[in-house]
Length: 510
Image (cartoon, rainbow, N blue to C red; front, top):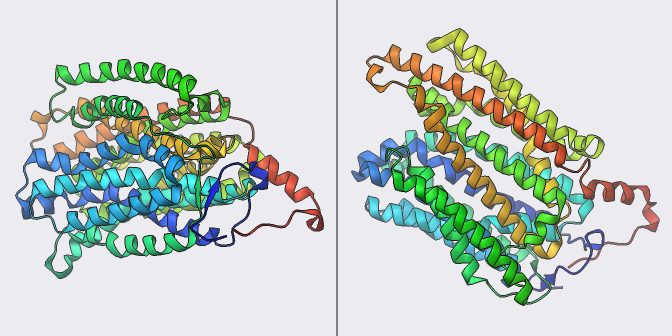
């Protein structure tokens, strides 16, 4: 079958044909996912350089950082559904092409207004591209191989979490060809072009088995609800938490309720809703989504306060702070790669629970060290808590995705993938909003009169925030009891391995 032929999701998971090109396709979509993860964080390091070069106002700088996240989160559910309807390969190629063009516009931006607009476009294109990554994996790989694949995906998440700040620091400090901050966007061009060319050749098309129509009313409702929630959270602290922000967040719950009612009616009327609410009747999906949301809160708090602590509290350079995170990144990648392939088949959800406890232990070690060493703490002293935390995170990120999608019907994999990514973004936004309470809420700005005072206050606020994150991880540990004891595909994999090789069905090539 041609690489451009469409495969509909009608076959049961255990009969999924094995495409020999699927590993190259996996490398392409994983690289795209990594590119998106890096772009979320790479900008923060380069903000001072942008401010100087473009003469950007504080408001413009906020939009440069928040615009991407807003456009990305608001479009994820729609992007996932579009993949189900029109084909995941098609939407992936449109998304990565648009993302590459938007990156070029960011890199050649002549002023702050152009950069803000380009970042909004970049986020919107990422919302088309990213949901297709998990959907393509779900539709392309047989169930018994997905554990290995999600282990690789978790490793990519770990690398992306810390590589953004480090890569941003290196590219900005090197000042390649006198371009200052611009290479942080231009580096996406060769990666994106290669992704388009390889994706056209090696990704097999897949889509939902029945003709679906895009639910435009659902798109409008869910986009409105997400913007009403995420925009005030993203900008609330800078704007002094105005009344309209609280009203917007409360109103988002009302709009969300209207969306659910409408989607139920839409399902009964023509069976083509934007969100398949039936997915929430799948216990593993519903419980996994709840854990994903809460985990996003923990990550949203930690990564921001960690950056503030190192760069402002301790006065470290962006490069020094970025290099300090390397042990964390390595630990996440190693643990993620091992967890799904080796540990989950044997221990099931206990692996995720062990990850939550391990990550909490790393946080407590960090709290002790920050109090013990104060402003004199060195990067090597942070290695122990960061490796411990990274190992814990790695034991969660890959198995969690594996578990959430384990019992999702393949025809809804795009919609489910969009929901997973959206919930993660919502959790992160909630965490960022809480930073104003758990971190900035204990800092007395009038007392920041000297470097020693700044270090003392930021260290105290950092320790307090880590206690909050540890508390959130305790909630996550308890919520994980609602997850299935063992994901479906690992039981199927065990059944496949039990069948003699000469009795197994030969794999088909598409």
